[in-house]
Amino acid sequence: GENVEQHPSTLSVQEGDSAVIKCTYSDSASNYFPWYKQELGKGPQLIIDIRSNVGEKKDQRIAVTLNKTAKHFSLHITETQPEDSAVYFCAASKGSNYQLIWGAGTKLIIKP
Amino acid sequence: EAGVVQSPRYKIIEKKQPVAFWCNPISGHNTLYWYRQNLGQGPELLIRYENEEAVDDSQLPKDRFSAERLKGVDSTLKIQPAELGDSAVYLCASSLLKRDPYEQYFGPGTRLTVT
Image 1 (cartoon, rainbow over the protein chains, first blue to last red):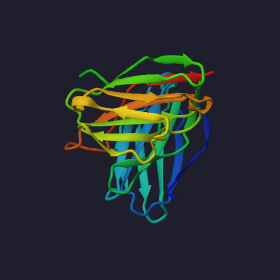
Image 2: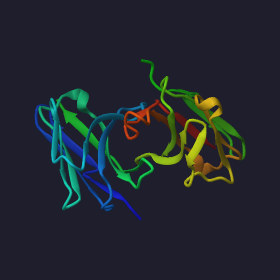
Image 3: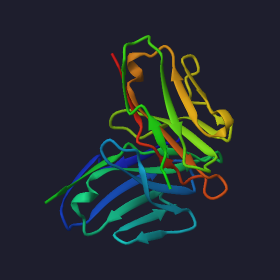
Image 4: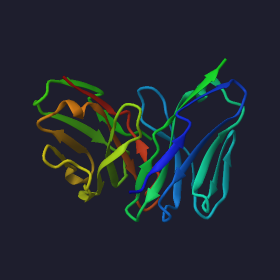
């Protein structure tokens, strides 16, 4: 069936450095790719998304890139700060019923 | 704007007991989702409502799980009887179909522990 693979499962970076999380998807029909941030004890929060007609999108320190040919998309966080520490999930749309297929998550640790 | 509200936040029950979770979506959001999130994994969709109608319940274990969304606003998810494997965080999310059906807003979740 359709799935989304996410790497790495844990990422530790020095404060101020950049962090990159990568996802691959299998469903060629996927056309929406959101990224969610989940802090401890909270529900996931949408931080950025991209649709299949766009290759890159940026919002301040966060950017997402999409390569539809290779079925890859990535989250880039620049100038990381302690408050960026959280679990990040990627997802890809499935079919026409607005369902999302989720990755397994990446725990991002920002070292002071 | 108030966010998605869920209660209780935590629940501990013994196996074979029933349990219910409640969700109040963001005002005006007509689409409501229930997800289950196991430790270290992404959310898995259980059921999706558009207004009062369950439009996707294909992944809801119907032998023990049930859900309802009366009047197209609040929703309740029930498990009866609970099993040890049901221990997880149950998340509710909502979205506004006509604006962007994919942009989902999540509540804080209910952490269920079955002993």
